[in-house]
Image (cartoon, rainbow, N blue to C red; front, side):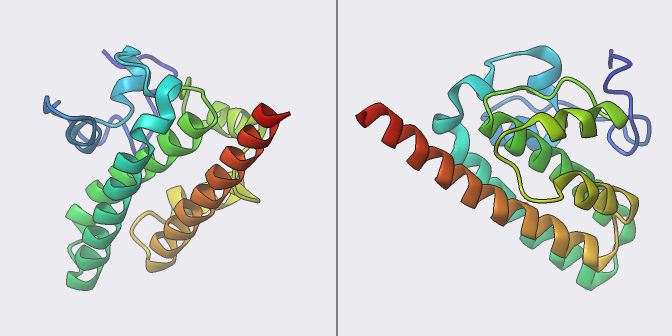
Length: 165
């Protein structure tokens, strides 16, 4: 059962997701926000452990999305972009040590409170969600992933420097 905080298009309502058990990347690729909804394993509390897996998964999914766009397979593109956007949202929140608590308008309020996030992230994410199968949405999402990775690197440097003091 999807809670009202997560019952938001395009993630829920459009598709019926079938959970595939296995590694983190398999679960994320089959059911958006599964870990946030169930609080199973709490990967946001062990982000350093899952970060590289999430980066690899995002790179693979971005390549797949670009290929689907090139083929003009809009149905599959919409599905894969939905999963990729969910992955980005998880990546951003988990990097900040938080789970995703809600989607919709509340998501953007929560994004505004995150310490490490790309500039204008809320507006850019809104653009991606509103133009999910357009080429520029794919480009924008790719840039958001890249910028979040840079923010994560900065966060690690800051944490290391505070430990040494």
